Image (cartoon, rainbow, N blue to C red):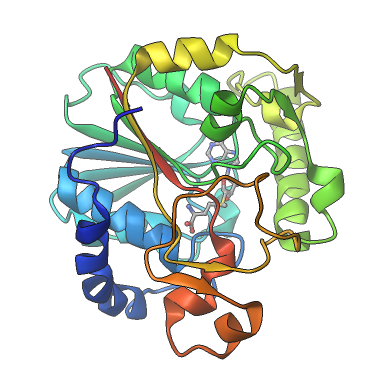
Length: 288
Ligand SMILES: C[S@@+](CC[C@H](N)C(=O)[O-])C[C@H]1O[C@@H](n2cnc3c(N)ncnc32)[C@H](O)[C@@H]1O
């Protein structure tokens, strides 16, 4: 699969220091459950490089990602979606916050140069179909989980032909805050769906879903993709965020700055090293 031409290791390395200062100025100091430095770096760099007119931020949470996109592209329109807006801690000038799902917005008249960023743990296959329909060709997925992990059907799973089985049960030990957040949202959604006045919502991630192993999702996706990149980790630790070793179960691009032990990550004065375990194969899909 082709990578976007601009997305080279040299370009990433050359921009790491510039982003440090932006990350240092972030308004949400504790963004556990949301993006940390590595993923924020690639999201900022992609937005800044592509300079879209419109950025869709699906998964507002406390508001950090919408803030980030405004730093990258001050002139872009940023629309930030969440189905649980009670979690938002900040309001950024120039950002439109929407209580609802991206698929239920009026996208008629959408600018040609738009970037959609999904950090909402929904089914990526559906998200790509929706983007294609709305005319959005440049799409990022923050939680691009590998086959055996995570709570959503990701591009990495599609391209691995693994299907999807919710790994929530096996992860609840390791990511308590994300799981309880997900439960809260599921309860809220159930209430919304029971309300006859609320719009029907496509939220199958919150129903028990199982997608069987298949290669047809991969074939269709590949036929729609012009370019795809999994951004490399900046540092890679000896153990994954799930506590197991990085091995052939987790095919990963070579880290930009190298391999470190968990102890070195904890002791490091480099924020990219400290937070390296938060990496989840963040990716960019460019549709034809
Ligand atoms: C991991 S957090 C997002 C973190 C945020 N992007 C950041 O970097 O700080 C995931 C968010 O997705 C939201 N969410 C769940 N389903 C959603 C949907 N269908 N549309 C938009 N947001 C959704 C959750 O309420 C939660 O706030």
